[in-house]
Length: 286
Image (cartoon, rainbow, N blue to C red; front, side):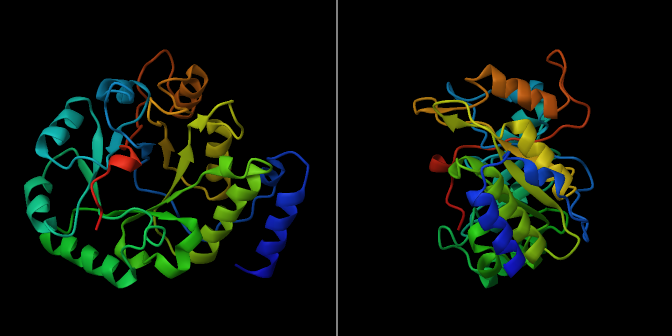
């Protein structure tokens, strides 16, 4: 991170102004971070008594599901039934076997071989590239979806080993000034991803206890304005037995998600996309 970026973030941390003052200070984008189609991703999808069903996901305006839990044909068939595409987990041990089974399924959008490398110590840049090459040897048309945590980007992110780049962002962690947290991630994107490649921010839409700002709409506006991204993920759900509340428990959050997905009267948006399962019960990524 350069000196100017550090100064701006420190100023944000200790400023007492409006948390979204920085949304007015938008710098030109030098690279194209858009996807060919618009993906509207509900991050962490796993239908259960606590989480939305396939039907509820589609009605909320998403049209792709990413899951940590399943990569079987039955799951893809169920997604296809409700007009959903899928991003599914895949492990290194049986990568080729799984890919050969699912690579031609019409509901498959991408595979997901790792989650936030560096944060969990797996896999390193060379391993990422090896996995990418193994996937492409099976099928050139299968896309790889890589999700990173911004703390370790330069050390751990291999831009040559993914077709989509997503990043997890949790502004509620900096409750005194969430905008500083958002700006920190924006600087990291600009500082490291200096090429044309699809970039998908993951918006946080759950919280513990009292409702918090920035809301879903403000986070969406921040990323679409500052990075000119046309796709996004929405991390919508926490475990129902915990203190975390998500769109299935909170009508206000559901309204916000429907608004950014252009949903009116419970009708599905024309070109919306995506959903994913819970982190603590995922298939090991590597």
